[in-house]
Amino acid sequence: MRYIGNKTRLLPFILDAIDTLGISPAVAHDAFAGTASVGRSLKARGWRVASSDLMTYSYVFQRAYVVAGRIPAFRKLRAGDATLRRALRSPTLRSRAEERGGTALHAIAEFLEAWLEPDCGFMSSEFSPAAGGRRMFFTEDNAARIDAIRRKLFEWRRDGLIDEDSYFLLLAALIEGADRVANTAGVYAAYMKQWQPNARRQLEISPEMPISGTPKSSAHLADAVAVARDIGRIELLYVDPPYNARQYSGYYHVPEIIARGWFEQRPTPQGVAGLVGIGRQKSAWCSRNTVALALDELLAASGARHVLVSYNSEGLLPGDELTAILASASVNGEVRTFGQEYKRYRADSDRDGRRYSGDRVKEMLHYARLR
Image 1 (cartoon, rainbow, N blue to C red):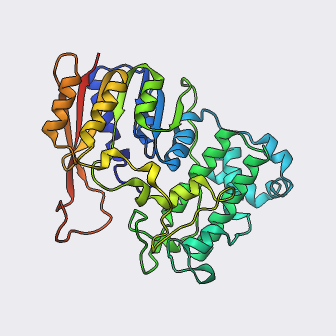
Image 2 (cartoon, one colour):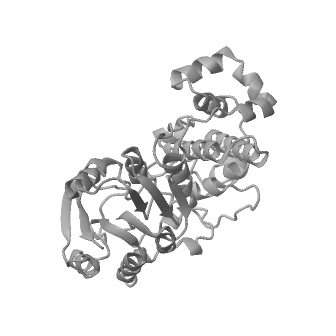
């Protein structure tokens, strides 16, 4: 998923720093999970991960990429859904599922992607031009496919035909697939006024295979401080908070709506971008007035032996102030820093009034021993 602060490209840098520090796999708290790329990588290395985030779509990714530990067989679903059962007998579907990877998860994904009838529902009416709508986040066809798949996942879960891991694996694939065909510059604060090439492609969903054979991890749709208090003594606290004043609840409201669904309580999108109520998901880390206090509070709540903070060179909290807070919490007053330049995530171009210019930014990893 296109995401501000996504650490996928920086994973080698982060994992190498953990190795250099000599921190062995145990229990880690990924306090701002986002797309769950760091938590997934830690799990693959043998860590037991407790991940957390305020956003529902992040919770979906956490459940799919950090918690799920086996490829589902979907026996109950195949027995309980006659339409699916008939489709699975099709040689075409079986052949396409085999090309995808050959598991039951691939077969279900093929069914959802190519065999469901499009359904002109909530996403179509609110976030596509269907029925005279003005918002151009998705083409009419892709919006109708999102509607159909999201409804089917809701019904399967409601009727007890799929377990929680299966549900979140498929829902994560839908959110990621929708993002690939979203008619945006990478965030959902606005849509493009002309259809981009990616938006004209047909929606595809490609579920990730779960990582098995590691200790059971957990996902939390909650504030990082509350989660830190609940999980108690652990080995590592990994902190990758927002760096600037952009609230993720406003920049990613469409993935959030897909994650929550609209079948039990229909949202009321407002304004040009279709924003919904986001008050409870506003982060103290997105304000210069509260970010230092937020870091202090998290460090005080955590029972971690080690803390590793990802922060870039243009963050709201100046580097010297961040270092001072970590030094104050450290057992020996020492803070170690690693740095690496990388290409900036850009959703727009430079213009007068921007706080930055250029395409490079420096990612900093700040380490302290807490206890």
